[in-house]
Image 1 (cartoon, rainbow, N blue to C red):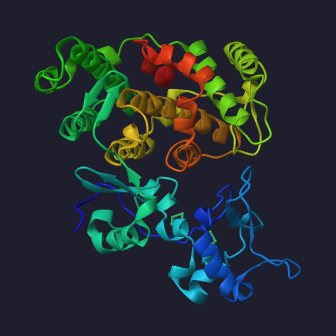
Image 2 (cartoon, rainbow, N blue to C red):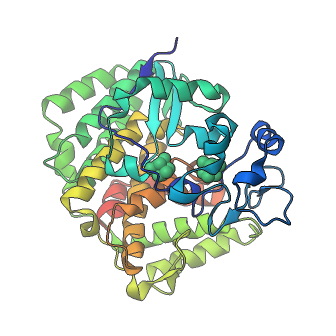
Length: 409
Ligand code: SF4
Ligand code: SF4
């Protein structure tokens, strides 16, 4: 029997909004599920053109993985009231694994199974429905469907490229970062910067004094209620042009990785992107939003995320990112935390882009970024292994004002 851990503050009840079956989702259909669908009378519950002989197509840029064809930008099985007609006709078991699992995602660790939830789901994002922790049987049922697909965190866990941690040590760090985020008298932006300062100090100390420094540092900073790192977080050292350059290059790199784009000219292209974003020239590519946003209409600011409701959602989001082990999904902990800081910059950028397109709810930006850069994307890791980006970002992650710049620049 696995030991399950549930988030204490995440709620979910499907509202049948259809968001997970629409827009840019390319649902991965595993071979077994494709066979199940083809063996059933799939035409009876599908909006497909009668001339077509299959409900599948290949995922963009992939020569072997199937997804469902689309009709009006939705999966061909999506029916009235945003209900899955295939599910209604044949039962949940016929659907691909990702359809059965969403918005759950499980992380297997040395300490048990952590039940992670996707903030791309509007119900999870807005905190609607009962606590996930109150429906353990549902999570355990979904967990049992296909255990080979779960994420794993194994010992040793790296704090950075030179320092290894045991599972217990990692947990102590995660709990301390969570304690920093739970300081509601500070904005989420200041908590993110304080966390970066705390981890940077811990790395320096552990490099000098070894693993014994960890409990000492945790005790000392907890006893002073993190006063020192929150004081650092409030220093006015953010750099707006550097932020534009970093996030602009990051977004340009994301688009460069699209199928069909040559990597030959990546470095010159990134250099040009750096320059362009430094000077606020041209537009900002915010895929998958419909169009690029011109710098003239683009006004990102940390103030966009400062209303009480967005702060509350963001705080829940970052604490849940820690809980579902987002910081150590294939990266070292320090890199994972710096990526989380970048994610905050992206959320602000997407909030500004959505606002320019007439969207009033800034929290929608969390949904887009979660889907496109975090929980449903391997981009964070791909970017880590690309030498051109590694070169740029390794330098800036270590800068003492990195988090200030991304969060408040
Ligand atoms: S996005 Fe969430 S609430 Fe909407 S249909 Fe999917 S699971 Fe249900
Ligand atoms: S098969 Fe059903 S649940 Fe899966 S994407 Fe299509 S409509 Fe949604």
